[in-house]
Image (cartoon, rainbow, N blue to C red; front, side):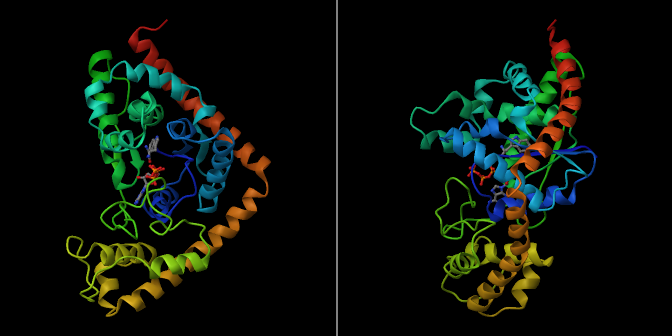
Amino acid sequence: MRVFSGIQPSGPLHLGNYLGAVRQWVDAQSSDAFYCVVDLHALTLEISPDALREQTIDLLATLMASGLDPEICTIFIQSQVSYHAQLNWLLECVSTYGELSRMVAFKEKSQRQEGYRVGLLTYPVLMAADILLYETEEVPVGDDQRQHLELTRDVAEKFNHRFGETFRVPVGTQPKVAARVMDLQEPTRKMSKSISSPLGKLNMFDSPRDIEKKITKAVTDTDGEVRFDWPKKPGVSNLLEIFASLSGETPAQVAARYTRYGELKSDLAALVIETLAPLKRRHDELLASPDELRRVAARGAEKAAAVAGMVYQRAAAAMGLA
Ligand code: ATP
Ligand code: LTN
């Protein structure tokens, strides 16, 4: 099964990124899996060149510390495989302004940036290029990426219809629990790197004290009953989903074991700390050898380019490029 997914080097990963995306990647890794640090996508954010460089290497270390093994799968950096930017242009010429301006992520993010740049609008086309270059069958992502995946499928189908069978049409996959981890302070909105407040997001490498503090302060409700019920009890349901995702139970099974919020929160904090501690140690070790991380990326880019080059040539020829 050909698997592809990508993640932006836009800052430290939070628990939503880990449970919604990265852990699925680890489960799906094989010689047919390609995972990409999408640094070109991160250029749509306000980010300094030094920060982008540092966060890109840090993200590589985070992915490997989470269990991705470059001996098993291919891990690479998007900008090191030039076909992504090249196919992006070809696909921009089959995508419409209308479909891109309907993307929810664009509508939200463009409201936050005054004089937003064109890259924010065309962002999902580059994402489609990422995916289609690898003849991808499955794209493991969190729930918030569903609409972008639909656009990728539409673009692929439109291209195939107009220029002949060129791209495989992929599907997105989400985990059964924790596909949409919510902000701990505003549990009706997703935990986000760029939008959540410091108390609202649990970073993978927060200190044990911070993890405890953030979970203790997580917003719940006043009826005091531990019950899994998203519409009525989003705060508690969010904690139950996170717990279940880490313990391998269902949220209802976890709920059945607790009567008080305090106990649920302190056990959840202990479980999060215990799960993440070895990953943090490994992350720090890996970061101590940045040259080795760069070698991993270079080898990954070479393997990725061999596949992407073939698909890019096919698309370019189909469109009539010489
Ligand atoms: P930003 O806020 O900067 O857009 P983000 O936190 O949404 O960042 P991304 O880098 O856009 O994170 O997403 C990386 C992966 O993590 C994607 O597959 C995305 O679906 C997933 N993901 C992001 N947030 C969550 C969340 N709260 N719950 C589950 N999965 C998530
Ligand atoms: N838009 C995605 C990141 C992303 C991606 C991809 C995910 C860029 N290219 C290709 C899957 C496949 C996001 O998480 N914000």
